[in-house]
Length: 45
Image 1 (cartoon, rainbow, N blue to C red):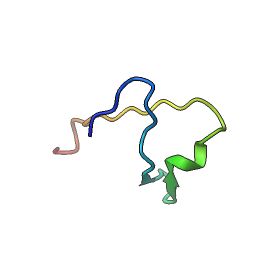
Image 2: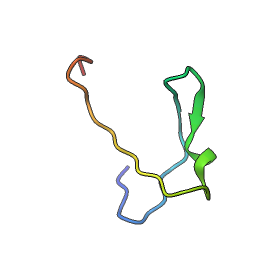
Image 3: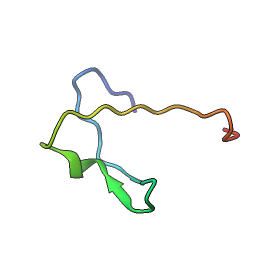
Image 4: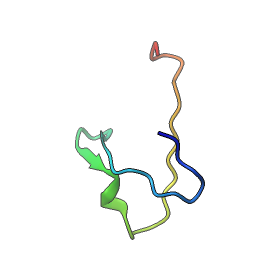
């Protein structure tokens, strides 16, 4: 799936650093949100 600038991101969930599941939809309407995905060097991806 390719998103274009200004297009809404699909809703998804990921575990937080506190062990709780966080859903993108929880932040809707609260504030601007920036998503950044990157491969980290120590992860073996």
